[in-house]
Amino acid sequence: MEPTVLERARAGDERAFGELTDPYRRELLVHCYRMLGSLTDAEDTLQETLFAAWRGLPEFEQRSSLRTWLYRIATNRCLNVLRSARRRPPEPVPPFRPPEPTRRDSITWLQPAPDDVLAGVADPAAGPEADHQARATVELTFVAALQRLPPLHTATVVLRDVLDFPTAQVADLLDSTPTVVKGTLQRARATLHREHGSIDVTRPGSATEQALAQRFAAAYLAGDVDGVVALLTDDSWLTMPPAPHEYHGPDAIAAFLHASFGYRGTRRAHLTATSANTQPAFASYLDDQEEPSASPAGLIVLTCAGERIAAITRFHLDTLYARFGMPDRLPVPAENGR
Image (cartoon, one colour):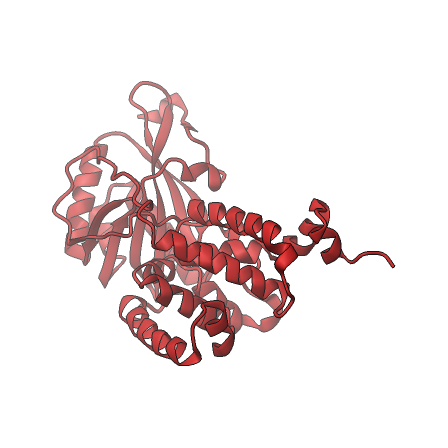
């Protein structure tokens, strides 16, 4: 008899191992991203997971499905990262003096994820409501809220509420008991509700969301602080990972925008539309003072709630641009450059 794919993989056949694990790569990457909040960390952890699975495959006893076994490995690797101290990127130095923030956040490693990375997170056959719920689990505010939970709480709520593993199976994956899982889940849900539950996120791709994004872009490009503030909810936030500065409410956000637009001066801003975490996003550029081109000035992600913007997240990492297919410099015609 021909050996099975599992038998060939256990014997060291890398192609057979790929046949076994390739169907789960995308969902495991998204799982790691939800838990870690950083696409860079998620990609690294996925590679560690697959390497551990390759080495551990001879001991895989098939008491669970291969998918469940892989989730066990990935979850434990994520927990190791969450508990480590290596997740503190250096704080960037702003090119201007920002106003005093409302608070300083410790979740400085947060990164956006391009929609093509998250493709397939929703089952198209499950219907529009299930699709909306699935997309909500990768929206930036939800991923950020997960980062504020203790590591074990994060793992529990992702495995149980997002991935829908049964309680007994979650307990097995975490080497715990159903009673402990239920208690942990209750506390995690309460914290998530405080951090995220008040935001009723607008459906991705809706006409309302598109109109909000267009109005934001017009006001931002014009340096119109009042125009941006008019689009905000009363409870809105502006954050700037990896900088810890956070501004809460229209007045605090307006103070920051005045400083930011003032630094821009007469230089022209440019926005290139994209999408991150199923939300509207823009790669921003600012005219170069020496040549007819524009340099990256931050990747902006909008969280829309109803007919207003509930959060503006501005990422100050130029390395993100390539992930979104954006150029590291934007050519600008000389006559329009300044």
